[in-house]
Amino acid sequence: MRFLCLHGAGTSGAIFRAQTAAFREKLDPERHTFDFIDAPHPSTAGPGISAFFPEPYFSFYRSTDLEEVGKTHQWVLRHLHSQAQPYDALLCFSQGCAVAASLIFAHQNEHPEVELPFRAVVFICGGPPLPILADWGLPIPRSAWEVNERTGRELWEQANSKQSLLAARRAKIEPSPGRMATSFPDTDNLESEDPYTLPAIDPRDVYGLDLTKFPESCRIHLPTVHIYGRRDPRCPSAQQLALLSQANQRLVYDHGGGHEIPRTTRVSEAIAGAVDWLEDCLALA
Figure 1 (cartoon, rainbow, N blue to C red):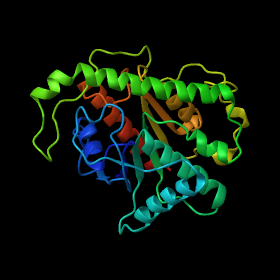
Figure 2: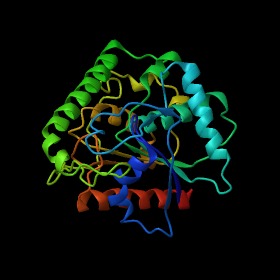
Figure 3: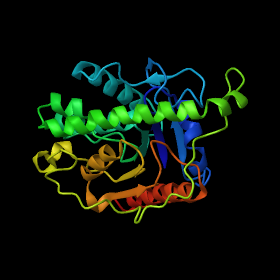
């Protein structure tokens, strides 16, 4: 499979390459390749990023108004269509997931007769793009906004706390200019009761969202993998996005950690297995 990789806000293609290295090492390079690109807009660092990675940092959006979102979609689509060899899937983290999900929804609403230029998506620490869905007229209750705003604040607070705790260590491993730090936040010995099963959630109240009111054009009809951590403040958003995907072609995995991609052998093997599962799904399609 050939993947286009969309990084999180305030990071870069090089950072996403480093973040995913552990599980990619478990995959057959003859079967899976990954293309890491930088988002179009220079930005400040995302939550917890500057403690581990040097500049530059990029983001896909400068705002979430529909004109800006549309420009981002066109930017991604130009890259997808410019390739001599098509991509099979997207691999996304955080903001990259919002880009992918909103692109899918926009395409299904505006050009339902045209096939998307990819056939599957791996979402890592993702979530539905609520501001974009609201601008399209979907019902986003106040309770859903409150969850979204609270978990966003908690993510930054958690990241800032982690950065302060790591300050002394970072001083000892400060990378040379232009080089990546080699230390990562890790999440050892964290096990979910059943990491491959979503919790039982009433679809009429998924952390404030009534998914029964979402049209089919705002659901994902591609094979998907959803990787998230139960200690991530944004975990509710990841589960919302998973429940907007088709259960019969969806794999979920709770790695047990936070807003990150843990580098443990257990987690790396599980994510690599999920990628292989996705390849099998496409082979059967």
